[in-house]
Length: 240
Image (cartoon, rainbow, N blue to C red; front, side):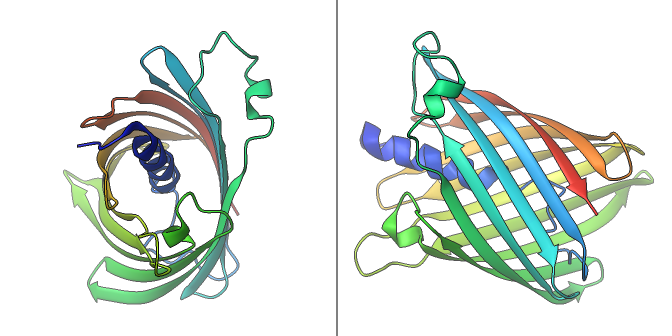
């Protein structure tokens, strides 16, 4: 249940930042591999009542070694506005950019095809003071269903309290399948917790490999609970 609207807006902002980086192209618990690079860029339009919100997000991973991955993420979101009030690009003017860095340590497999990773995230200007430093854990499992490649993974993270404001805690689950040799689809379900807010979001996404190195992505997301919003995402991935 949402306690008050300003807290709801903060929660929705943070959930958007967290869930977008759960896409199947991101290594998560699986090692990126020494010298390998992955880049993702996405634009999104979310709608709530008669207002909408625009955002663009960018994510980079680099495999330092087979067991260490570093990365960065950047996002900018407008407020909730009437789409007729301003041109889309003008709505980003003066809006702060959220950014962060992370280091992920791949711990190996707990059982066959089930890797685990631990992560430290540092944010430049987090929405909540308690989210300036975050700890995360990832576990995944790859398998086959009727000779079709599939995967599942679970991630959880928490902000470290600075002695004042408590950071966000969240958990995200993902289930995906390779539909065709060049087409993958997956579902993400996420839930966040703060001292005052509980909020859930589900996203259905697909990726099409345009070339060996580039993929196009599309997704639809919706929140559940006291705050109702839905939206579309369009993006591109590149790995090399």
